[in-house]
Amino acid sequence: MRTDRKYLALILVGSLLLYACAYIVLPEEVEQMRSRASGNWTAVATGVGKSDAGNLHIDITIRNETGDWSAMHAVEDKPAVLTTGSGSTNCDTVFVGTGGHRLAPGFQMRGYTGGTKAEPQIQPLYVECPYAEVTPGSKLAMDIVYYTGELNYFDQEANKVEAKLEIDLSQVTTDLVYPVAQSVEGLILPSDAEIPAINDNVLTLVNAERTDEGLQFTWRNYNPTKYPLRVHIGTPPVIGEDGIIYGVFEIMDLVSPPITPAGESMDWTTAVAVPQDVTGFYILLSVESRQQRLYVNYAIDISDK
Image (cartoon, rainbow, N blue to C red):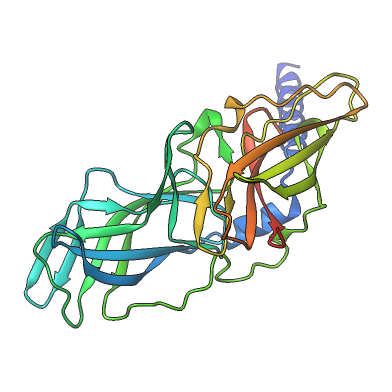
Protein backbone atom coordinates (compact mmCIF):
# COMPACT_ATOMS: atom_id res chain seq x y z
CA MET A 1 0.00 0.00 0.00
CA ARG A 2 2.81 2.41 0.87
CA THR A 3 4.53 1.48 -2.37
CA ASP A 4 1.38 2.28 -4.34
CA ARG A 5 1.11 5.65 -2.60
CA LYS A 6 4.74 6.36 -3.41
CA TYR A 7 4.16 5.66 -7.11
CA LEU A 8 1.01 7.77 -7.07
CA ALA A 9 2.95 10.68 -5.53
CA LEU A 10 5.62 10.39 -8.21
CA ILE A 11 2.98 10.39 -10.94
CA LEU A 12 1.34 13.51 -9.47
CA VAL A 13 4.69 15.33 -9.21
CA GLY A 14 5.54 14.37 -12.78
CA SER A 15 2.17 15.63 -13.98
CA LEU A 16 2.63 18.95 -12.22
CA LEU A 17 6.08 19.39 -13.75
CA LEU A 18 4.72 18.54 -17.17
CA TYR A 19 2.00 21.18 -16.88
CA ALA A 20 4.49 23.73 -15.55
CA CYS A 21 6.78 23.13 -18.51
CA ALA A 22 3.86 23.33 -20.93
CA TYR A 23 2.85 26.74 -19.51
CA ILE A 24 6.22 28.35 -20.29
CA VAL A 25 6.27 27.87 -24.05
CA LEU A 26 8.70 29.97 -26.05
CA PRO A 27 7.43 31.72 -29.17
CA GLU A 28 8.44 29.80 -32.30
CA GLU A 29 10.87 32.48 -33.48
CA VAL A 30 12.62 32.49 -30.08
CA GLU A 31 12.98 28.71 -30.19
CA GLN A 32 14.50 28.97 -33.67
CA MET A 33 17.00 31.60 -32.52
CA ARG A 34 18.05 29.49 -29.54
CA SER A 35 18.71 26.55 -31.84
CA ARG A 36 21.02 28.78 -33.86
CA ALA A 37 22.79 30.31 -30.85
CA SER A 38 26.14 28.63 -31.33
CA GLY A 39 28.29 31.41 -32.78
CA ASN A 40 30.24 34.26 -31.24
CA TRP A 41 30.70 37.99 -31.45
CA THR A 42 33.09 39.16 -34.16
CA ALA A 43 34.72 42.51 -34.89
CA VAL A 44 36.59 44.40 -37.58
CA ALA A 45 38.76 47.49 -37.54
CA THR A 46 37.20 50.40 -39.43
CA GLY A 47 40.00 52.90 -38.87
CA VAL A 48 43.60 52.94 -37.64
CA GLY A 49 45.30 56.22 -36.79
CA LYS A 50 46.67 58.41 -34.01
CA SER A 51 44.84 60.01 -31.11
CA ASP A 52 45.42 63.63 -30.13
CA ALA A 53 47.85 62.32 -27.51
CA GLY A 54 49.81 60.41 -30.13
CA ASN A 55 48.57 56.95 -29.16
CA LEU A 56 47.54 54.28 -31.64
CA HIS A 57 43.74 54.61 -32.12
CA ILE A 58 41.71 51.72 -33.55
CA ASP A 59 38.04 52.25 -34.47
CA ILE A 60 36.00 49.05 -34.14
CA THR A 61 32.70 47.62 -35.35
CA ILE A 62 31.25 44.61 -33.56
CA ARG A 63 28.85 42.09 -35.05
CA ASN A 64 26.43 39.76 -33.26
CA GLU A 65 26.96 36.33 -34.79
CA THR A 66 25.76 34.35 -31.76
CA GLY A 67 22.50 33.45 -33.51
CA ASP A 68 20.44 35.06 -30.74
CA TRP A 69 19.82 38.46 -29.20
CA SER A 70 22.89 39.33 -27.18
CA ALA A 71 24.51 41.99 -25.00
CA MET A 72 28.31 42.12 -24.93
CA HIS A 73 31.13 44.06 -23.27
CA ALA A 74 34.88 43.83 -22.92
CA VAL A 75 35.99 42.55 -19.52
CA GLU A 76 36.37 45.58 -17.26
CA ASP A 77 39.80 46.64 -16.03
CA LYS A 78 41.51 44.18 -18.37
CA PRO A 79 43.58 45.54 -21.27
CA ALA A 80 43.32 44.55 -24.89
CA VAL A 81 46.56 43.12 -26.26
CA LEU A 82 48.14 44.32 -29.49
CA THR A 83 50.47 41.79 -31.06
CA THR A 84 52.89 42.89 -33.78
CA GLY A 85 56.06 41.47 -35.28
CA SER A 86 58.07 43.15 -32.54
CA GLY A 87 56.07 41.85 -29.57
CA SER A 88 52.95 42.60 -27.52
CA THR A 89 51.56 45.83 -26.05
CA ASN A 90 48.84 46.24 -23.44
CA CYS A 91 46.11 48.68 -24.49
CA ASP A 92 44.32 50.04 -21.41
CA THR A 93 41.81 52.28 -23.20
CA VAL A 94 39.04 49.90 -24.27
CA PHE A 95 35.52 50.95 -25.23
CA VAL A 96 33.97 47.85 -26.81
CA GLY A 97 30.42 46.64 -26.13
CA THR A 98 26.71 47.23 -26.64
CA GLY A 99 26.22 49.65 -23.75
CA GLY A 100 24.04 47.12 -21.89
CA HIS A 101 21.56 46.73 -24.75
CA ARG A 102 20.78 43.44 -26.43
CA LEU A 103 21.52 43.63 -30.14
CA ALA A 104 19.61 41.58 -32.69
CA PRO A 105 21.40 38.61 -34.31
CA GLY A 106 23.00 39.56 -37.60
CA PHE A 107 23.18 43.25 -36.63
CA GLN A 108 26.40 45.23 -36.28
CA MET A 109 27.22 48.46 -34.47
CA ARG A 110 30.01 50.98 -33.93
CA GLY A 111 28.80 52.97 -30.91
CA TYR A 112 26.16 53.46 -28.24
CA THR A 113 24.70 56.11 -25.93
CA GLY A 114 26.59 56.22 -22.65
CA GLY A 115 26.45 58.60 -19.71
CA THR A 116 23.11 59.14 -18.00
CA LYS A 117 19.57 59.99 -19.12
CA ALA A 118 20.15 63.53 -17.89
CA GLU A 119 23.54 63.80 -19.61
CA PRO A 120 23.78 61.24 -22.41
CA GLN A 121 26.86 61.04 -24.60
CA ILE A 122 27.67 59.02 -27.69
CA GLN A 123 30.40 56.47 -27.05
CA PRO A 124 32.13 55.20 -30.21
CA LEU A 125 33.80 51.79 -30.03
CA TYR A 126 37.59 51.95 -30.05
CA VAL A 127 40.84 50.83 -28.44
CA GLU A 128 43.94 52.96 -27.86
CA CYS A 129 47.46 51.63 -27.37
CA PRO A 130 50.33 53.83 -26.10
CA TYR A 131 53.46 54.21 -28.20
CA ALA A 132 52.45 51.50 -30.66
CA GLU A 133 52.45 51.01 -34.41
CA VAL A 134 50.49 48.59 -36.58
CA THR A 135 52.70 46.42 -38.78
CA PRO A 136 51.75 43.71 -41.30
CA GLY A 137 50.15 40.78 -39.51
CA SER A 138 49.21 42.77 -36.40
CA LYS A 139 46.29 41.52 -34.30
CA LEU A 140 44.24 42.94 -31.45
CA ALA A 141 42.72 40.61 -28.85
CA MET A 142 40.53 41.20 -25.80
CA ASP A 143 38.51 39.17 -23.32
CA ILE A 144 34.74 39.70 -23.57
CA VAL A 145 31.59 38.62 -21.78
CA TYR A 146 28.26 38.25 -23.52
CA TYR A 147 24.72 37.21 -22.64
CA THR A 148 22.24 35.65 -25.05
CA GLY A 149 18.46 35.44 -25.18
CA GLU A 150 15.88 37.28 -23.12
CA LEU A 151 16.74 39.40 -20.09
CA ASN A 152 15.59 37.88 -16.79
CA TYR A 153 15.69 40.54 -14.08
CA PHE A 154 15.94 37.87 -11.39
CA ASP A 155 18.86 36.08 -13.09
CA GLN A 156 20.77 38.66 -15.10
CA GLU A 157 23.83 36.37 -15.31
CA ALA A 158 21.84 33.72 -17.22
CA ASN A 159 23.31 32.49 -20.51
CA LYS A 160 26.63 34.17 -19.76
CA VAL A 161 29.56 33.32 -22.03
CA GLU A 162 33.20 34.28 -21.58
CA ALA A 163 35.11 34.50 -24.84
CA LYS A 164 37.98 36.17 -26.66
CA LEU A 165 37.49 38.72 -29.43
CA GLU A 166 40.28 38.88 -32.02
CA ILE A 167 40.66 41.52 -34.73
CA ASP A 168 42.95 41.24 -37.74
CA LEU A 169 44.48 44.69 -38.20
CA SER A 170 46.02 43.89 -41.55
CA GLN A 171 42.64 44.78 -43.06
CA VAL A 172 40.72 47.99 -42.35
CA THR A 173 37.10 47.84 -43.49
CA THR A 174 35.55 51.15 -44.54
CA ASP A 175 32.49 50.11 -46.57
CA LEU A 176 30.22 48.57 -43.92
CA VAL A 177 26.44 48.98 -44.11
CA TYR A 178 24.62 49.41 -40.79
CA PRO A 179 22.85 48.11 -38.85
CA VAL A 180 21.90 44.85 -40.62
CA ALA A 181 24.97 42.84 -41.57
CA GLN A 182 23.23 39.52 -42.15
CA SER A 183 19.51 39.02 -42.61
CA VAL A 184 17.82 36.56 -40.24
CA GLU A 185 14.53 35.25 -41.59
CA GLY A 186 11.52 36.34 -39.56
CA LEU A 187 13.58 38.51 -37.19
CA ILE A 188 12.59 42.02 -38.30
CA LEU A 189 8.94 42.90 -37.72
CA PRO A 190 6.90 45.50 -39.61
CA SER A 191 5.91 48.59 -37.67
CA ASP A 192 2.27 47.46 -37.33
CA ALA A 193 3.06 44.00 -35.92
CA GLU A 194 1.06 42.74 -32.95
CA ILE A 195 3.55 41.68 -30.29
CA PRO A 196 2.64 39.16 -27.54
CA ALA A 197 3.18 40.34 -23.98
CA ILE A 198 2.67 39.05 -20.46
CA ASN A 199 -0.80 37.64 -19.53
CA ASP A 200 -1.85 37.41 -23.20
CA ASN A 201 -1.70 41.18 -23.61
CA VAL A 202 -0.97 42.49 -27.10
CA LEU A 203 1.39 45.40 -27.77
CA THR A 204 1.33 47.48 -30.96
CA LEU A 205 3.33 50.44 -32.22
CA VAL A 206 0.59 52.87 -33.22
CA ASN A 207 2.79 55.67 -34.51
CA ALA A 208 6.42 56.68 -34.95
CA GLU A 209 7.19 60.27 -35.81
CA ARG A 210 10.11 62.66 -36.00
CA THR A 211 10.34 65.48 -33.50
CA ASP A 212 12.81 68.32 -33.08
CA GLU A 213 14.72 66.16 -30.57
CA GLY A 214 14.51 62.79 -32.31
CA LEU A 215 11.79 60.13 -32.45
CA GLN A 216 8.53 59.73 -30.53
CA PHE A 217 6.67 56.41 -30.38
CA THR A 218 3.04 55.84 -29.48
CA TRP A 219 2.39 52.38 -28.03
CA ARG A 220 -0.95 50.65 -27.51
CA ASN A 221 -1.55 47.74 -25.18
CA TYR A 222 -4.69 45.60 -25.31
CA ASN A 223 -5.55 43.73 -22.12
CA PRO A 224 -7.95 40.81 -22.73
CA THR A 225 -8.00 39.68 -19.09
CA LYS A 226 -10.45 40.45 -16.28
CA TYR A 227 -7.87 42.38 -14.29
CA PRO A 228 -6.12 45.75 -14.80
CA LEU A 229 -2.51 45.20 -15.88
CA ARG A 230 0.56 46.98 -17.20
CA VAL A 231 3.22 45.79 -19.64
CA HIS A 232 6.77 47.06 -19.12
CA ILE A 233 8.88 47.95 -22.14
CA GLY A 234 11.02 50.70 -20.62
CA THR A 235 12.19 53.35 -23.08
CA PRO A 236 13.09 51.37 -26.20
CA PRO A 237 16.33 52.41 -27.95
CA VAL A 238 16.91 52.49 -31.69
CA ILE A 239 19.83 51.75 -33.99
CA GLY A 240 20.22 53.52 -37.32
CA GLU A 241 22.19 53.49 -40.53
CA ASP A 242 25.14 55.07 -38.71
CA GLY A 243 25.54 51.95 -36.55
CA ILE A 244 24.96 53.71 -33.21
CA ILE A 245 22.43 52.66 -30.57
CA TYR A 246 20.55 55.74 -29.35
CA GLY A 247 19.05 55.58 -25.86
CA VAL A 248 20.71 55.01 -22.48
CA PHE A 249 20.28 51.45 -21.21
CA GLU A 250 18.14 50.88 -18.13
CA ILE A 251 16.12 47.96 -16.81
CA MET A 252 12.71 48.16 -18.46
CA ASP A 253 10.58 48.16 -15.32
CA LEU A 254 12.20 51.38 -14.07
CA VAL A 255 9.77 53.13 -16.41
CA SER A 256 6.14 52.51 -15.48
CA PRO A 257 3.62 52.59 -18.35
CA PRO A 258 -0.02 53.34 -17.55
CA ILE A 259 -2.23 50.52 -16.30
CA THR A 260 -4.48 49.02 -18.97
CA PRO A 261 -8.02 48.40 -17.64
CA ALA A 262 -9.52 44.92 -18.00
CA GLY A 263 -10.79 44.26 -21.52
CA GLU A 264 -9.58 47.63 -22.80
CA SER A 265 -6.66 49.30 -24.57
CA MET A 266 -4.29 51.98 -23.33
CA ASP A 267 -1.92 54.29 -25.25
CA TRP A 268 1.30 55.94 -24.06
CA THR A 269 4.42 57.43 -25.62
CA THR A 270 8.17 57.03 -25.36
CA ALA A 271 10.89 59.13 -26.97
CA VAL A 272 14.54 58.83 -27.89
CA ALA A 273 16.97 61.56 -28.96
CA VAL A 274 18.52 60.98 -32.40
CA PRO A 275 20.31 63.28 -34.87
CA GLN A 276 18.11 64.79 -37.56
CA ASP A 277 20.42 63.63 -40.35
CA VAL A 278 20.37 59.93 -39.38
CA THR A 279 17.77 57.56 -40.87
CA GLY A 280 17.25 53.83 -41.38
CA PHE A 281 16.20 53.09 -37.80
CA TYR A 282 15.14 49.86 -36.12
CA ILE A 283 13.60 49.78 -32.64
CA LEU A 284 15.32 47.33 -30.27
CA LEU A 285 12.25 46.47 -28.23
CA SER A 286 12.23 44.41 -25.01
CA VAL A 287 8.74 43.34 -23.91
CA GLU A 288 7.76 41.87 -20.55
CA SER A 289 6.50 38.45 -21.58
CA ARG A 290 5.49 35.06 -20.14
CA GLN A 291 6.31 36.05 -16.56
CA GLN A 292 7.08 39.16 -14.54
CA ARG A 293 10.40 40.84 -15.31
CA LEU A 294 11.27 38.51 -18.16
CA TYR A 295 11.89 40.51 -21.32
CA VAL A 296 11.71 39.10 -24.85
CA ASN A 297 13.36 41.06 -27.67
CA TYR A 298 11.96 42.27 -31.00
CA ALA A 299 13.40 44.32 -33.88
CA ILE A 300 10.82 46.69 -35.41
CA ASP A 301 11.45 48.25 -38.80
CA ILE A 302 10.91 52.03 -38.84
CA SER A 303 13.56 52.66 -41.50
CA ASP A 304 11.17 54.93 -43.38
CA LYS A 305 11.18 57.52 -40.56
